[in-house]
Image (cartoon, rainbow, N blue to C red; front, side, top):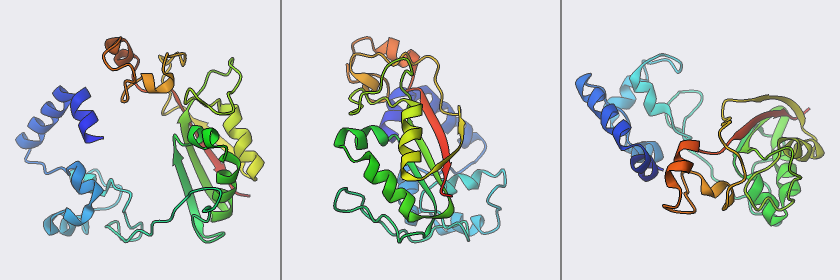
Length: 222
């Protein structure tokens, strides 16, 4: 991801670095976010005195999936494997407060395992637990391809998949919407950045469109 950002937005990176140097701000590297054990002790010491929601540059070091929700520092992560049909126990049954998935439904549909995965997420959650889903949003006027070969998934189709597993739909957000995405690209969603499946062909056109239009949905386990 860091390579992609540097390639697409070199001027933004340069300006950000200059501002940080001028203001003597220390911001995390992508490597530090991936491996928080590399973050200097001087930074973690500062974090102990900064609230989780405080507007403070040092909180940028908390943007990592290894956060410990109690201390606001870096806890241990237990990695499990989701590989249906054989491995679907992503957590002990009824133990999880929240499950999040980002742009994975089309992969599960292509593999024919979407129902199994939604059932696995439902089983892992506590009653009242939340499922958050982000996915490339298809054109509702186009019938859903069961294999989602374009990478796009119609929002109503995704809701039905979740409800079939027992989830209750709560609400959607347009925070990841992109009205410029026409969803009819030669190589599907992978035509757009950051993949650029056509490489340099019409690159400026697809860069102007930006990344895909996406739905963001919240479900709850009753």
